[in-house]
Image (cartoon, rainbow, N blue to C red):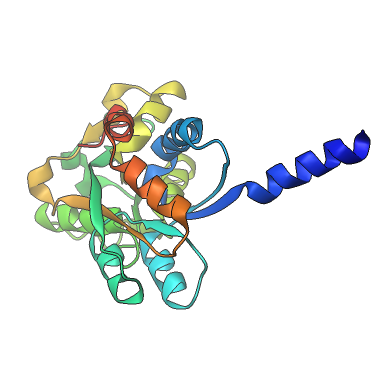
Length: 232
């Protein structure tokens, strides 16, 4: 009997499809909910989610990293990979930039007096590039006060630990409210101040589960989750 049970377990494990996802750090919170919703439809899929900066993932995939699907924080890093696969990149959501001030009311006007502003590396993190656009339009020398983080997730950590302000993804608002921060600590930045953050994804491998996950990300169910976390 034990041998039979072990065989059943082994077969079930063998039939499980593994899916490796490379995802921009800004979608960490909604992606967890989306992953759980997806698994209700595809319970046999085992998903490994890796989050970080889009630029870094772009480079890793070009150098042979074995991801099945890439969800970028902008369109450029995803479209740049179309030459490596027969697939095309598609926009799956639009992100919004948010100014976070842990200990005061968030205000763009006060940034000129700030000693420390956390921003994601604009070369590898699209939200960082958007933040620099905003700072340039505010027309002051921000170079002495800006501290760069490797990703949007690390930008939040840097803001919480050391900086007065941080430019982060609006998707963090829900979690920050749970942590006890108030609405006044967060300001959704006027979209006119930066280039729209259109986030695209692309299927990298021939893994069937990657196409299933791709289709689910574009579904009404997934779009509703993104909207709940502050995406357009």
